Length: 614
Image (cartoon, rainbow, N blue to C red; front, side, top):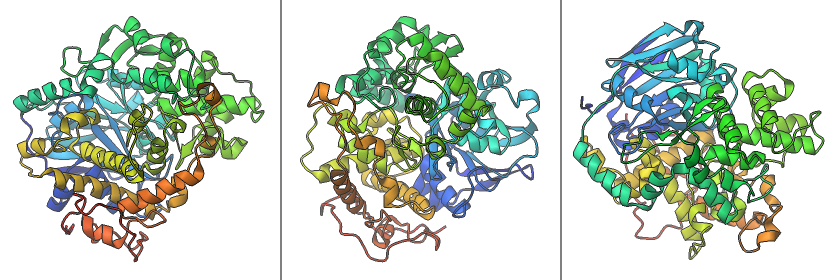
């Protein structure tokens, strides 16, 4: 079945057990497209400043884009909410069969908006363009694998024990824990609403096969496509170790002696198969572990292997499968255990923990997911919460409450800027300039460095609104997806879509500004102001402490480039330029004086003034 262009949204109120279909304002579809963009528009409108993330008043959106399931690669959906971990806007993405089946089940709807709180655990069943709220029964309390197995003829997105217990980095798991909307705690919000699972029953939509095949060929010929086909994200650990940006033993070093035991060759030796093995863009490697089958991504060997000093691949795969079943983010779980080990070494905990101990790491992860011990209960609220309770604020780097991931920015100052300015807290997926800088790319000046970060943030905002796999960026970069949108009846050119990306990024910033975030929240973590312990052993390859003055200069330039004030607030001029002046509310502080621009005169980031009239 070919999917019609979606123009509606299903609104679910769990408190009243009501389901309603509503038309999405046409201006919103035009200016925000779907996914991240539409999620930003709804979240800014639906929530009042200061809404408690785990309250009934918070909303949770499961959103698709107008070409979800049609583009090459793995389909994605966006889970959008206010993060319980950071208090920021949160958009988290997951692939697998669920977004495909959700697209087929929603009919003329672009997503589902969930508000309220059920009086007992429930399941949301979606089929034929409608939804029903049903009792979860004895599914409450079981893990992600068992929950998905309860619906053998459907695709499921669910919470595990971590989400039920409001662990603030709980995930929304799909495909038996193979895929997760991971970072920031969307699973905790879902669990707080007593929503155990969303079940999509209908088959995935079809259509645009010729266009898909052409882009599959284009992607396969790109550098990213060749890398994805050969190894996927698991090659990340090999790259990070080679260039000295691998966060090792709780962010103390930049290289790990056991990295070769965890990299892609080790995975190939143990893998049974790959997801979508016959697809032009194959998926991850499927591994059998002591805690069941899993599909480890790049973050698994990085954060649960090198990060914890464990060089046994089977042990790392088992830790990953444990996180998958419990529904807890592998990145923050790894960082939380690393923090606990370092805190133990510093004498801050009454517990003896060591790097390299897989059994102890697994025990702490289970304690976090179940909140069954004082340490686990505190770590379940995040590393900053644990540091506030026990000390050790400078052990593991965090930004806006979210711990850093995958790459140590002491090997790449542009990566430090990307972490600091990321909208949901430290996140390597918003922009990855480290992949160029660590390999010796020489940007000519600070404008080019800032443009690399901001430009990638804007492009990803567009990708995540389509929603397309962000690894397709190479194949979409020539027009940012304009050809795909034209194929479903939406006409844009590349400059217009560049503006869409900037508009979305700016609206998310307005949401965070309204929540009280400012320049101080874009600062460098204390943990990065000390050099890596192995920096002297590899002079010239990075690892030295970041320079706060140098960073502040880059941040200042970034704000000016974006048209934000010195405090990081979008100015009136910027809002007018992006058509956001009629969107911003009185609770959001907006500077009346405009920032000095650093844009080139011929920049395509100067759109005609538009309005967002509803």
